[in-house]
Image 1: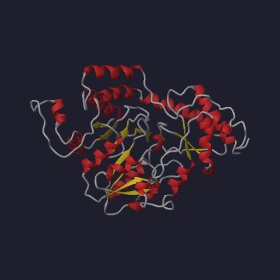
Image 2: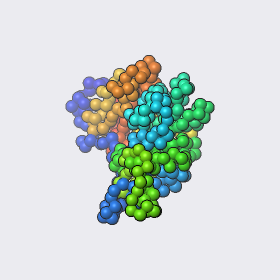
Image 3: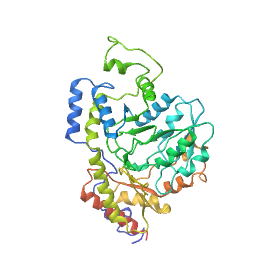
Image 4: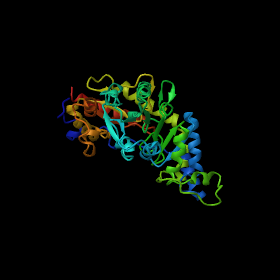
Length: 394
């Protein structure tokens, strides 16, 4: 079979699947729907209600961490961290070049500068060997990202941070439920930020969390999160007899109580969802590994990913044709994350030559569908379509 073969759907042949198999679906069940309904009927539907606080307690217990602040996104959780730290304006923060813009926005929204660090060419995570060359007297923090739910090399990153007295904020937007060296992600950095966006393994539609054992940071963040007020104390003990005080500058980072309820029911399913995604990832690997023109994301040593994304690495010169051919076969495939330095806002911060790992990884990567409600028949169709398309290149 060749790229112009008439049996390929892209050439008007018969597709493997008549119905499009989406790249992702949130997993929601009756328990989730009932929790939403019950909380809405309670009429406490505004921010930082009792279900939000319950979700914070339960997530803290799940991770074994002291403090969790539920926010309206991972983006605002990252912003909140840097607002609470209040680093001197112009200080520098190291972020990976292959990530979503939110990783960089946390520092940038707080008058800090970013330094882009290249990533591994085989899994998209920050390359620790590239970090120290970026450190100078203005550097205050490192923000590693767990791309695709595959934990970054946190031991090495923490060693570098300790050596240079740097703060570590782990952007774990994609990695809830993942494990690194026997401990859950969320326990390795000074602060970890999670996402519960509709595309994530567990979801509150929109949402995020700041997780830490740092008492002082949380004391400041609690005020900032609620528009700079002491409303948290008012909600818990009501010692101020019906009013609360404006303590500092802040913004509104709190989340609806309805979504706090959804967080509680979703959290119960975290390990099951991870297991289901792992089962699907193993099925893909076992049924595609013999293809000579496909590689897979390298899993970090001593890590257990949560398989938020299943990526295949394909010949870069044919990547977009492969994506279009898979879509024609009924399988929604996609590219992911243009390296930051290639985006209008970040242009000039680095060159392709300086970011060779990022460019090589980006130019090879395609995502395949993976989510718990994917049926076995759909999994087989994804494999069949992928084999059909990739064999056309041999």
